[in-house]
Image 1 (cartoon, rainbow, N blue to C red):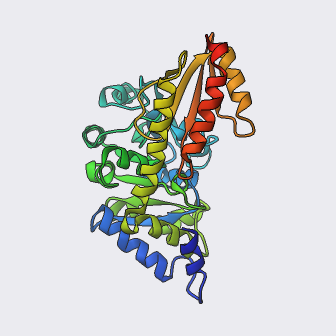
Image 2: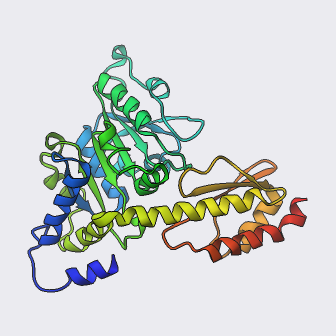
Image 3: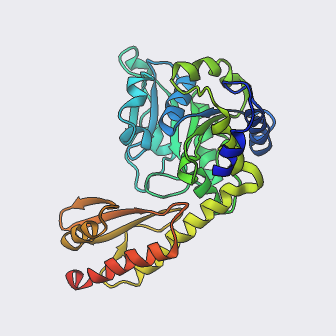
Length: 333
């Protein structure tokens, strides 16, 4: 991707997407997601999510999402502040919405005009707790949304990891399964910067060029974003990178399972691992990892540590962490 940026820096081309790299990006999006798909390079993930939701709903409407969704807990109220949308959170056992869970947040027509009417169901693929939706699960949510006159949005910040974990294509677990709009991740799969919004069809994409500008997401030198997206899409480089980070997560999970006193918080499906320890050893382990300390969630006498492998995680990084974990074994036992 760095090489693609350097190559894109040669010569002079038009700005704001009027360049060969962005034209090629459009071709690759149609090849990956179908002939009607339309893609728009964006500057970052939060901006991609907010602009996508702005295209799908009006400011007085609402979005149904899991209570652990990135748009709810990690985007500093941007969907509310910028898109003007109310987020209707749903507690889930594993980070994944189901039609039955989402149905609990449907509005009663008798309550209008006093409630925000849900217009979008938004899911993260993979979720913030590392679980992955199957194509059938995405399809069921899409059917539910459409039957209730809503649209389905997929936050695909880790879409590559989700697809690689199931040996499927990017389309098969998002738009191809029935979703309407996708925030296509690139940063968490090694890009320097840049993401994309992809629409399944042209209807919702109409006017998005203007909305993207109004959402502060239009890059004048768009070729540098497009070049990175192209590098990931060409020859499925995204799969190679995501497959590596998934493999490192599995290696880490295996090491944790072999460590006395340490447990996995849940099965590992993509590149996120949850390590469960007694609270004091958990605190000491996190301190020992400084300056790259992972997130620690304290729950009484237990501590749950969130670990994320990435495109550049190496086996020696996993071994180093497992060594710190083993050093904590006397504290555990």
